[in-house]
Length: 314
Image 1 (cartoon, rainbow, N blue to C red):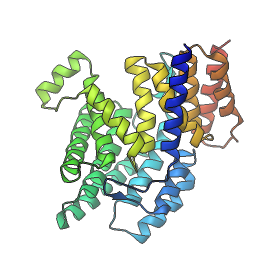
Image 2: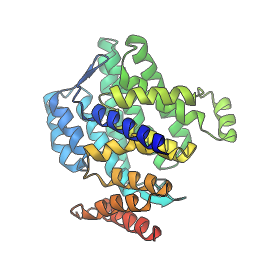
Image 3: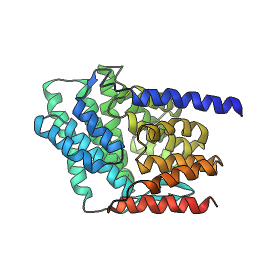
């Protein structure tokens, strides 16, 4: 038990150092400091505060997809938060119906793809393939939230294609590795019936073990997808593999870096509860309640979820 605890602490220390490092270059991908500030706003739990920053990027570089990709990221986290609920003892955004605001989000994702493709017509670069892949990934997220499986498959395959091309041009592109890793992991975890449908639909297969290694690269070396992968990876380990200790070691640095993000606090509290560490779990759920309340639906939702978890611990 002591050895396992020591290993967990060591992994968390390494992960914290990786998450705190302000690397703006990896495998040929660079972003301006303004973009990093916007990303920190998003992941600190203030996506609305990031919007003016990303729109300034759009005005400064209207033909570049970065500012639009980051606006899509900010909008996604708002939608994710608004759809949070507890199912099977796990907090996540499971599924919701179509909403009128979705159309603007999807148009923004399309713009990311189109701007990247316009740049690719001028020069075939790994960077622009990553942005095109991110645009498709933004669409896949929304379709997944709405339970539109065919659209998820179409967008996911297109994202994978773009990321693979990026890796052909630059094998060290960590964000592209991350994108392929997410695809590999999720496709490998599909049920046998869905896998059979995948075969008939011509959807490329996945590789779970390879996906794990690729996501590890993404969360430690990526630039744009570093935090996303560090959030997606432990959720996957929790839901599909029940590897709660490893999931906690990966997720804990998120609350170290962004202690005001209620979504990260709920995930880490949830993982501690799964491990039977109720007192520790309660600390994270109480931390959610201590975050200054706002008038948004998402703020009310995270507080309700935190209270539900706290009630379940007694």
